[in-house]
Length: 153
Picture 1 (cartoon, one colour):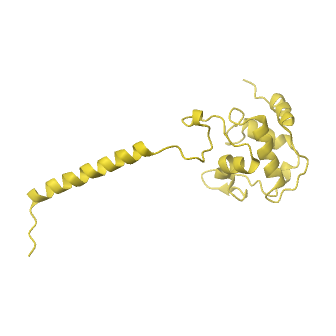
Picture 2 (cartoon, helix red, strand yellow):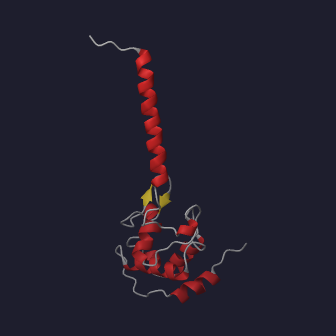
Picture 3 (cartoon, one colour):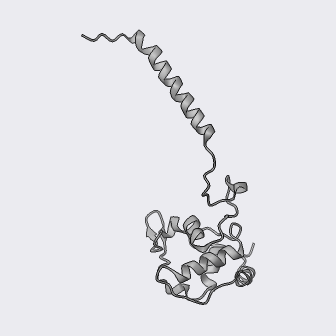
């Protein structure tokens, strides 16, 4: 018959706990920033500039968390409108103004995305997901929209 004594358990448990704490501390210290990150290294602790320049990469890094990978939107803790086959994207000014200044719970990205990045991601959405709007935006177009839609402070 197996006999278990409490006095024999404590040294064993202390060893397990010490080993677990040591492994946990070591693993946290060894963690590095992964190579794929949406934020630049200078801004990992707060919102800041995104590093991607390609529209598809920007969509995956910035937009798909709310609008979903297929751009069909979602309902749950909030309402995230579908971007797929969306006739409101026919005019380029509205989506650019929404990205710049936010709207109805959507955060503003004016301080996080450059004009070139906004043009890239808006062009990507307007040309994919069942959208076929061929009038592409340039960085200069976004700059003009940025100036004309600045929120009043």
